Image (spheres, helix red, strand yellow):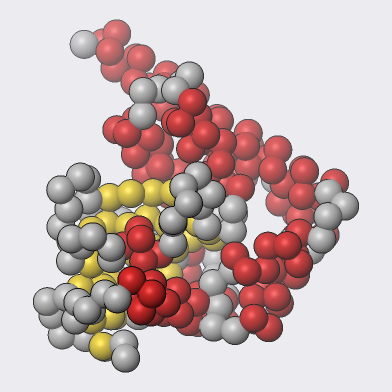
Length: 236
């Protein structure tokens, strides 16, 4: 029992360090890059319009922000990413074979290298109710907020969106993120011909808690709850 617990702790420590190292390496590369990442990645930002997406991208990939991220110490990175980091490591322990599993290693290495991280807690599912990944994702062809949350036999769920850097959202950024989530979910609903009577709560912070998220810093997360069985704000 003690030996098994020690192995589990060791795997958790290794995974945590993989994510922290990936964060540090990613932002050093961003700082050195000569590509116009703000232009190339603008479409990845959650916002209601292209102009706002461009503005968010320019701030996120600007040299001042990149320099600040690249200078963070290991302790500062760990603090910035927690408690989401611990939730992600538990998900990795549950879903993958451990260090050396190529898919699991990719998950750890890529988690802090996009614009956001999404945590989806489904109201009902045959195959696990919680999923965590970078957003946007790039490992599968069809992967958007609709696919993560509402496709198939889903009855909806709770979506949490975090900045991949763990930073807080300003009020403007939070409003933009909600507008982008609304836009992307509606796009998925329409393109799939989904006729479920989806009902949305676009400001579900503090109202749609799931186990382990009680008391989290609500300025670091945008929470949207979607269902097809209750009262709320229907999106037309």
